[in-house]
Amino acid sequence: MELLDEIRSLSMARELRDRYASAEPFPHIVIDDFLPTEVCEAILQEFPAPGQIPWRQFEKHYARKLASRGTSSFGEQTREVLRQLNAAPCLRFLEELTGIADLIPDVDFEGGGLHQIERGGFVKVHLDSNKHPRYPLARRINLLLYLNRDWRDEYRGHLELWDEQMTRCVRSILPVFNRCVIFNTNNVSYHGHPDRLKCPPGMTRKSMAIYYYTDGRPASADERDHGTIWRERPSSRRAPITVANPLRRLAASMRWRG
Image 1 (cartoon, helix red, strand yellow):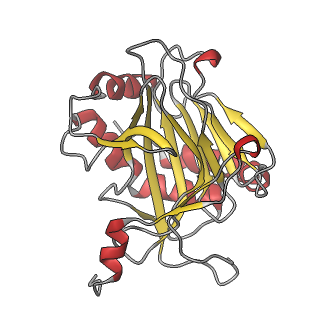
Image 2: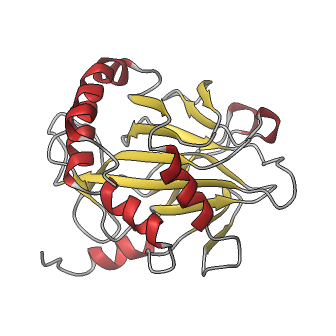
């Protein structure tokens, strides 16, 4: 099954691009029913439980979550969806929506793939690393697809979008089933879900994350390369914390050959 009919998806992108560009606090869009329902159901059926695959575990003061490594442990339907979200029709849709040309997919899923957060977990507000951890590419777009059936407001886990000065949460997005959030990755795109989950025991917050890159940034983009920068909300503000990616440090010490 083709997930995105190119003609229809380009038409939708043109309809949404002005809303995307003018969204506050930074360019983004929320699209419900992003994929065919049966496709999302198939991903959910294959979604590995905690302990079922070798998840990468984060147990830090800034995050408590699980993240996948590569795609070898995914089910067939999940791998096919990831393939199509990295394929030309989706890239053209995103380019039309965001105005960012010549997008490059992350076929290695370095940091992307499947994410899962158990009861009590959280991810503090942060700026994503703006470089690929292995190659000299600039990270430009995040696509997040949520896979949470019957997720309630009181479970928390909302994706929060914060202003550049970290004075207020401008938008709070409930991570419900088949809801897609697309946003620019830049030096003002502060986001996270900093409140600890209060979902029932055994229930988890599930999502799929895809990152897109370009070969450099526009000259007008006033950005320096950085790792993930974690920020505290005003009630518990501390100095920003930059986390350097060890793979990126390794890549920087070697000459990349394309």
